[in-house]
Image 1: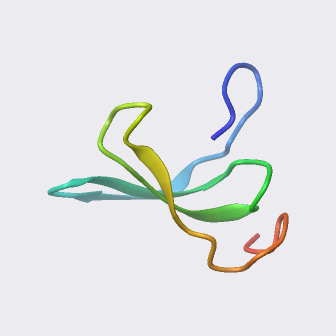
Image 2: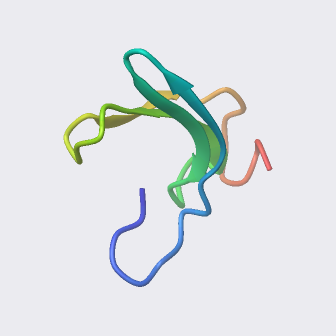
Length: 57
């Protein structure tokens, strides 16, 4: 995830008991599936579904 002034463009938000699933761009993998428990440490890339920058766009 981008921090500061850059935008990760999160979208496709899905709330689940264990947190939030969403699509976002970290600048390396393109738009991919992420999960967050609401903390910075608990916000992780679930899987690089389509490899390469901007591959999942």
